[in-house]
Length: 148
Image (cartoon, rainbow, N blue to C red; front, top):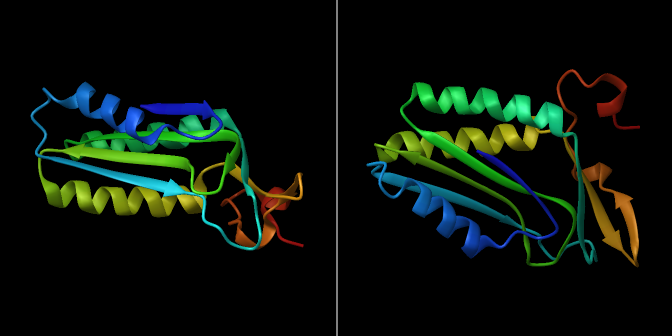
């Protein structure tokens, strides 16, 4: 399940909803990952643009991988502005076995950083500035992924 929200994520609400959705599923492990906006480089926050068709396709492939391992993957991400110390990203794996969940969440989060079509901007002085130095080119994106 992929969930997209405008603005910061309500972490406790989302994690509680996901836990309740899977409470009767007989999974032995529930491993969440919560990403928050750090106070660095004098930013006020971050802003995100998402290309949803590619994100949905990318996430669908991960859902299939999870299913092959008897697991379920869920992800939430913000669109737009997220201020310091707020969350922009949550992922969670539900699995019968802890080892599967632990390995899968690591693989998923690393691939998310490398492959998800989400563009990050710094919020500084009321301006939105592309975070080129902290961005990763998406494989196959050609000129759109190149750093100048």
